[in-house]
Length: 153
Image 1 (cartoon, one colour):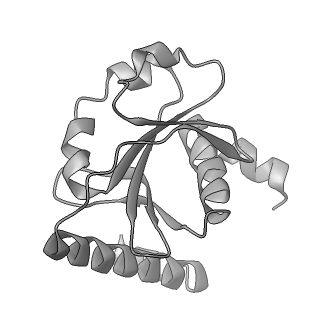
Image 2 (tube, helix red, strand yellow; image 1 turned 180 degrees about the vertical axis):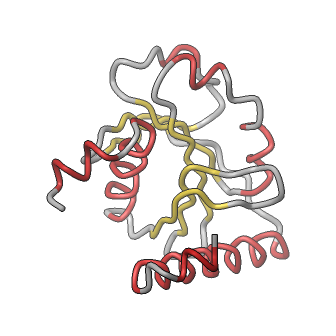
């Protein structure tokens, strides 16, 4: 499938996530999408930096998408930095000033405002890195063996 066909199959938030992931790779951060740090929470993008930094990026494709998100503050305890990723038409004045901000599209992103750093406790960092690794490994297995997703879910 070519890039245009892939873009058509993805939802707006997934397109933003793709641009975010591409951009963060330029900072030597690796990423996974749709990771569950704890029961009842699923982050759009989790990024793992070269020094073990953990960033979470929530992608919001519209004002309604942002307004319906009642869980985002619960993500703060699972990362060193928290960001919103929105497109250039999004009303950024709605987003809290004490969070990071990225402007993104399907192909790239730009960090407009760095989220404040709140370092994870070592035990929490270890848990998050293990969750990241397991999530990435399961995604890799599913890509190599699509029938695995029938078992995995």
